[in-house]
Image 1 (tube, rainbow, N blue to C red):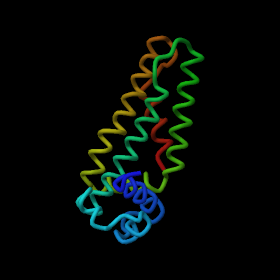
Image 2: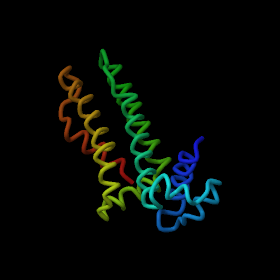
Image 3: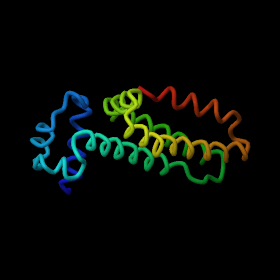
Image 4: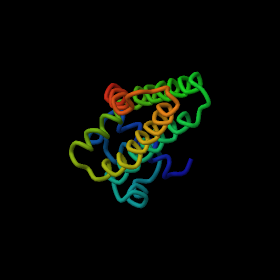
Length: 158
């Protein structure tokens, strides 16, 4: 693993465990084994490292979602893909609950890095799901898509 990836991985772990404010740069350096100057070099500081952690989190979510929201041939395949997507999403939220909470807090505080990552990842996941459900609707498998999508996402946010 590169030192950049090690810093991101360590930051995700510590931010999840202690929160952004409760994690010091020296802790990240100590746990990662990477020289403290690399945080400034790669990310411009702790805040940039937070953005990279959020980006990684958002990217992982998008990759996981897209893996299941593909074409389907029949109702059974549609149902299986939707269940797999929802299970993966629930697992993702439970595994990363603290970091997602941090992400949402950063969004509420107007942190630009969180907002841009939200727009990239979360909005894209929602669009993929809406497209998947729209296809299901056209095939007569789903009726009220927006209501269903809103209920799904509101029930998954910690």
